[in-house]
Each structure stands twice: as structure tokens, then as C-alpha cells.
Amino acid sequence: MKLFGIILLTGLSFFNSIPAPAQQQVEIQELIETFFEGMRLGDTSMISNTLSDHVELKSIYTDSKSGKTKLVEEEMNNFIKSISSKPDSVVYDERLLSFDIKIDGPMAIAWTPYRFYLNEKFSHCGVNVFTLAHYSVGWRIVSITDTRRRADCEPD
Image 1 (cartoon, rainbow, N blue to C red):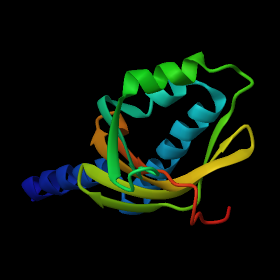
Image 2: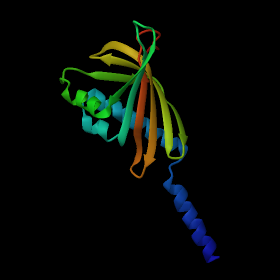
Image 3: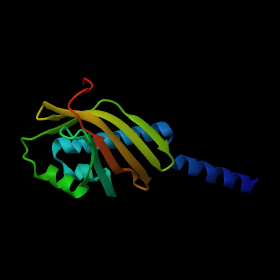
Image 4: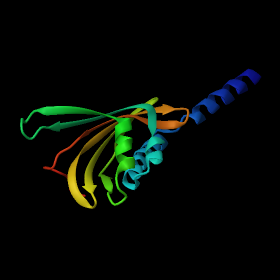
């Protein structure tokens, strides 16, 4: 009977250490919102606290001249530098329209349509796809791939 109690307590403590799926979705959404709030505020520490040690950053778009699909990769360090070096008068405001989050154990993806504004002026729209991993410190972004376009954009 003692052994059963020990096994039961061990099992319960294991399941309590894994957040419920709904709670994980909230954590992921808040993490992504923190990333963009950091971008809007120009706070690179806020952004960095949402990221894994190695992050891939990619954009997919249709070249307006050739009509061909292009894939551009950017170093996260360059992105962080661009945020830290922008004047305070410049505001990057990426407004997320919705979240579709899928989780499988320590991995998650989030599909987030957005509209991007530069100093309150509409610039472009698209979709972000985040891949996240769950570490001992919580969820962290491991990759971001986005699309960018100026036409066929959802309203705010």
C-alpha cells in the first residue's frame, strides 16, 4: 500500500509539472505578444527574453518585378541591432489579428496573421509562423517565418 501511495504521488507531481494545453496556449500567446511589444518599444532585452539561443528568421514574399517567390534569411543578431539602432521616434507596430496555436509535447507552432505599421502608417500585412520549444525556463521562440504583402490585407 505504501508503494502504491509513493507511485501515485510521484505520478501526480509529474503531471503537475506539465502545464495543461490551455495554459500552454496562453503562455505561448503572451510570449509572442511580449516579442512584439519589445519590438514596438525598441526594447531588445524584452525581445531577447522570448528567444531560444539559436533562432532562425526568414521571410517569404513574391518579388514584384519577377513574380517569383523569394526566401530571405536574416540573422537574429542583425534584427536585434536594427531594433536597438532605430531612432526613438520610429515605431514598429506589428498588430496581430489572431492566434492559431498547435502543441505537441515540447514543440509548438503559432500562426499569426498581422498588419504592420510604421509610425501609425500602414506598411504591409502577412502571416507569421512561429516555432517554439519548451525548455526548463518555459516556452522560447526557435524560428519565425513570415510573409509580406501590400494587397489582400485583412482589416484591423
